[in-house]
Image 1 (cartoon, rainbow, N blue to C red):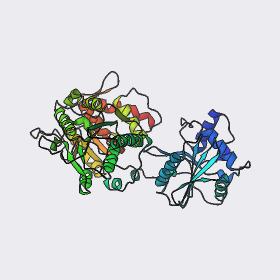
Image 2 (cartoon, one colour; image 1 turned 60 degrees about the horizontal axis):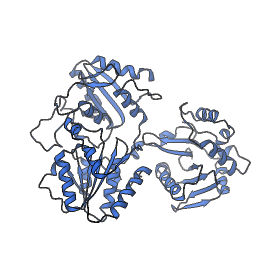
Image 3 (cartoon, one colour; image 1 turned 60 degrees about the vertical axis):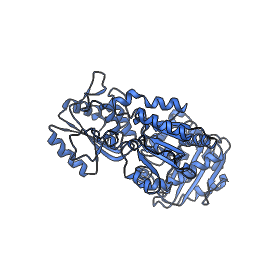
Image 4 (cartoon, rainbow, N blue to C red; image 1 turned 30 degrees about the vertical axis):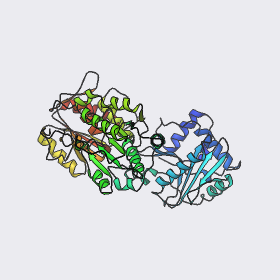
Length: 507
């Protein structure tokens, strides 16, 4: 992405030409859209702040609508010194949205921009009222003047400002905070909730604040990347300030869970919650990955919550079911009925456009997915299992996490059911062990049990363990990756040819 001159683009009134012009100057995707009212806001900003006599240099080298890869965090206008010693951030509003929202946005922006420098000049311009707001060094929002902003921009003419390569300044991994994957950063509060998360959080805490003796039930739903676990743990952290809280994880516990446990969190695996489990010491019970609860486990939790008048919050993804029995039970429907409402998260915190596009194309090859080259996707072919293992060993050595489409049985109450796996020597992680987790790079093996039907939909023959839904295991596994995915296809040339045919024209 290239920086552009706001004075230049402010000369164009036609909406279509304005979009084409900005995309050309910024080297953006030709299909990139200009947000509603953005054109008028830029015109107003340049005209008003310049005092009727715009200075070309003052408006040069601005990055327009830059978004941090994979997390969807966008900035309206950024101007960055080449040596990283100073950043100017201007957010555009067509209408006054309230000082609290302006403050929250600038504070959040400063958090992300703090990776570059601590010398950040943060402004918001409201075009309908021609007002300017600034976030001071003391962290307080104040009304600024157009003259103040103009003076700052005029001082930038002689400086060496970045013209391209803004993407290199931001490392996505620094911002993808997870209570399980990065528990230390989570405990330090180094994250922000989305507006939607914050809204649901407020509603839940408000209801809890009015609670009397009767049990309260809440349901949070969301697909991978929407932050349901982050929200659940954020609420848990708040409740822990004045209450005893129990967290139940419906999967295998990880190092992240153990880290939180050492910090004083009460976290247990769902299979530990048997008839003899003592719920009496807790005022709140929060359940993560609740779609995997058995009928017995769900009813046990509900009964104890009613008995002790507890707060009970379930977080789940209806699509992330692994067993036939889980599909039949309809646990998510039951939770929704009990709670009276399902708060569905739709805003994606973790948003790797390339991976999301590939997931859709891979699972249903007739869908239309444009604008992605899939440079983070490797699709490889091996004639034999031995050849596949050689390739697998190489990728594991490169830091890829191998996820076997199998189940360890570690999260089940039953202990006499054997794990199903063909590659245990290379796979410390199996499907039920990675529930709720994410990895930078993932490698997986697909064999001759996978095929595309006449409608272009990926199908699988029955899983070796008939209780499990093979396609759901696959979906669970491929959505664990953040950055890169490698699929090793063994002894299934038809599948390999089909998948490579889907992406061959994008390189």
